Amino acid sequence: MSLIDVRGLTVKHGGQLALAHVDMTIDRGEIVTIVGPNGSGKSTLLRAIIGAVTPDSGKITTAPGLRIGYVPQKLSIDPALPLTVRRFLGLPARVSRKVADQVLAEAGVPGIAEQQMSSLSGGQFQRVLLARALHVRPDILLLDEATQGLDQPGSAAFYRQIEELRVARGCAVLMVSHELHVVMSASDRVICLNGHVCCEGKPAHVASAPEYRALFGTGTGGALALYRHEHDHNHDHTHTHEAACSTTS
Amino acid sequence: MLDDFLIRAGLAGLGTALAAAPLGCFVVWRRMAYFGDATAHAAILGVALSLAAGTPIFLGALVMALVMATLVTTLSSRNVAADTLLGVIAHSSLAFGLVAVSFLPAVRIDIVAYLFGDILAVGRMDLAVIWGGGGLVVALLCWRWSALLTATLGGDLAMASGINPRHERMVLTFSLAVVVAVAIKVVGVLLIASLLIIPAAAARPFARTPEGMAVLASGLGAISALLGLRLALVFDTPAGPSIACTAAILFAISTILSQFPGLRRG
Image (cartoon, rainbow over all chains, first blue to last red; front, top):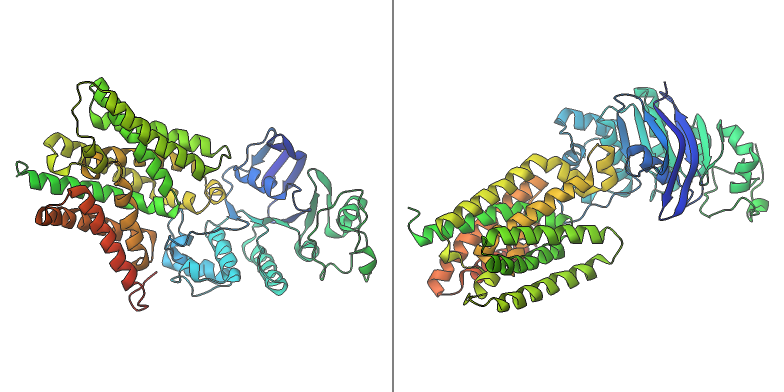
C-alpha cells in the first residue's frame, strides 16, 4: 500500500479555502515534489499530513507505523536557548554520540555536533534539520521549502544530497518547492498545486501540461535551471517573462 | 530544627527558587515574561477571594492564577494582540484584587505581605505547601522535559514528532500557576517574575545546553534566596525585595563576566 494516501482533502483557513478536494499518494522510495505559487496550499498540505492542520473534510491515511522525518520551512531558535547541534538532534528522542556523528556526516555536515545551533550558517542549519529528520530512520522525508534562504548553488547541492539519501536509504521524499529546476531534475513525480491539484505526473509530462503552463508560463521548459519563480499567478494570467525564456530542449 | 523561623524562611526561599528557576528558563525561551506577570498579578485577586471566603490563600491564588492563565492562553490564540491583552489583564486583575481586598470588612490584613512576600512568617504548613507544590512542578518539568523543549522549538516540529504543542503549553501554564501560588508567601505577587526570569537570564551565557542552563539557574536562584535572606537580616531590609535584589546583582555580575570571551560558554 501507499505510505501516505490523501483523499478529498479540504482545508479552510478562517473561512478561506486553502485546499479543495486534494487527492494524492506517495509510495515507498518515491520522490514527489509539490510545486505551486505562493499561497497555493503547499505548506498546508504538508502540515495536514503531519497532523498540524485539521482537515475540514477528506481523509489522510498513513501506512501503519510510518516514520516521518520532517524538515520544516524554517525554524527560529530563540537566542536565549543554548543548544548544541547534538542536543538538537536528540529532541525529542535522545541520540547517541555515534548516531549523531553518523547522521551529520550523511547530511553533509560532519564534525559539528558540539557547535551551538546559533553559530551555524544558513546552509549548515538546513543540513542539521535534515540530519535530525534522518535519525528517526524515516520511511519518508517531508521537506517544506527546505532550501529557503540558500543561494542557487547551495540549494542545488542540498537537493543532490536528498537524491543521494534516497538511493542510500531507500526512503520516500515528499517535498514542497517553488524552485522549478529542482522539480525537473530530482523528482519521480510532480504535483502542481494551486488550491487544488492542477495536474500531476512525470516531470516532463507536467511541464508540458496546459494547466502547468498556465501557472508557470509556457516557454520555461529549457530555462528552468536558471529561472526562479517568485510571483503569484492566476490561471488566466499571461506570463510576462514568456518572451525572455526561449525553449532549448 | 523547623522551630527556628529563620530556618523555615531559608527552606521556603530555597524551595521556591528551585522550582521557579527551571520553569523560568521556559518562560525566557518562549518569551512568556509578560504572561508570567499576568498570572502572578491575577493571584492577588485570588488572595482577596480566599480572604473573603475563608479558604486557604494558596488555594485561592492557585485557582485564580489557573483561570487567568487559561483565559490568556485561549484569548491570545485568537489573534488578539497578545502583549496588549496581557497588559490589560495583568494590571486590571491586580487593580481589581487590591480594590476587592479593601472591601473586606474584618480584614486588617497587611496587603503589602501579599504584594512583596512575608517570608519570615512562614509556618510549617506553608513549608509543606511550598515544597509540595515546588516538587510537583519540578517533577512535571522533568517528566515532560523533551516534549516541552521540542514544542518550544516549533509547533510543527513537535506535531511531526507526535507531540501536541497545546498539551505542553498547558503543562507550562499549570506549572506557572503553581509556582505563583507557592511564591506569594516568599516574594509576593509583584516579585515572582524576578525568581522566574532573573536566574535564568543570569545563567544563559554560561550554559551550552538547555539542561545546563536549568541547573545553573536553579543554583543561582538558590543562592539568591539564601544570600538575599541573609542580607535582609544584616541590613534590616524587607526579605522579598532583598532576594530579588540579590538575583539582580548576580545577573549584573554574570553579564559583566560574559563579556570576557574565555568565560562565555554558549
